Length: 635
Image (cartoon, rainbow, N blue to C red):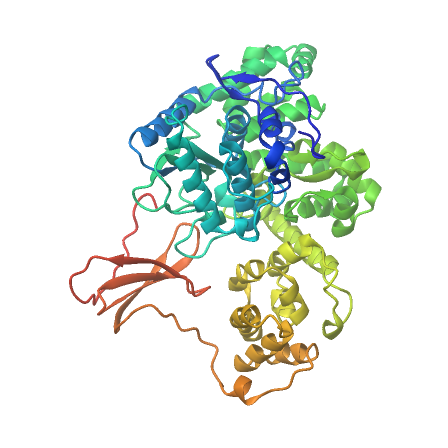
């Protein structure tokens, strides 16, 4: 399907790397699924059209096959299929995590599976992909259409279709439908999620995107992620890891490069013009990339765009960080230092700071660089490193980084500890430029009036979703937390997710008040939301927020509202008797949890940032008086 919902040509079947037909092209599936009574579900699903060109899997000689260039991963795909069959035969559900470091081709594998299987698929890198609510609606809509579930009226999802409970119910329906059909009884119910580690951090005890922790029999969620970033309940996970140094990974990448060097007209021409053999080129690029797919793919795009000659491959640095640093050095040289500092670096930092694709005009405005100069950089110098979402006219094309690893690189973290003084200086430049980009974006998204007169009613969806993060990374969240319009306009999860970046007592008190007010706002829908924000700001002594909220409500204090003086602490409730032990539990994703135990013979986990309870561990036959933390190798 095209972005406007029109059908486009699609091949009926796609073959596996070994030549075996294994599925139907995703475009054809989309056309077949979202028709008849399921037509309106299309509006809740996120199409995958932007992905093929972005991942460079389309072969110009086979334009109707979006994954024609995919090579390798035969052993891994075989392992996936075998795991699915075991789950069906053994009547158990589970998670299959495809773990690999950044740039190792996880998204390429997920794209191949999405376009060759009939599995509902979700990609966090797509617009709205990081929203847990949007992800659950997307998967639910595809699940209903795939299994033809009788779960909606008139093809329209209900209001609660974005909840984790509703998604789990549809998984149960799909499993029941499968079991009642003799023709499908041996088929697994599968959801495919790419980049699960890039979704917002979930509350303690939950999974990213609100995916269910337990699954019906014969139901599997396949998710790609970086190693040791997710904790799946014991007994439900099997981890397959793509090792960058593994022989199979390097052979897969070599097979891919070899196939391209004999089928891609642009690569063939470049090799001929450089007088370089395909075998030498492929093996040298493999060694320079160290088996990292995104490194090799970007070099290929630079050759196609005439930014590199195949003869340059001998001079490429080793490793992805070295490759990015080498390109920045080259850009700096080509533009000249003044132009790089005034145009190149601000546009690059803005590109890696944005959280959704933006057009050139917006990127130029947020970078503070003239639009013609910004367009030139997007279409020429930075082009191989960007994903482009095509619009009706090229003027409206939208851009964002092709790979998360570029965002990670521009934070400076990968270079800060380097022994190379030049790289440490580069890390400092990138860190400063990225922070400045978040500062500019925050200023652009914030109404220009004084805080007491801010008008947030016309805020864009991008603002309400991403402004808290931009403000937090710019060091401005404390200031905005005192603005009731900001708090009430933005999504609660977006605000609370970044509260750990608050640096002042006033900012922390304001967000504490906001968190407590959310319940009363939901409970008393007839009251002005600013009233309850004002009440709780007084209770938590968030003076600035209280004063600003008072200007937005005609209400006055009552005995009922003012009877509690309160403090700014949070009470964690759950234990039924005396608590006698407490331990601090660091987890691999950077969060810190609390573990508590006591006379009620349980151990409870807590997220001290949000106050949300996690799993309760039972089993002790008497009071628990001591806790200790034991890190395990898998995190």
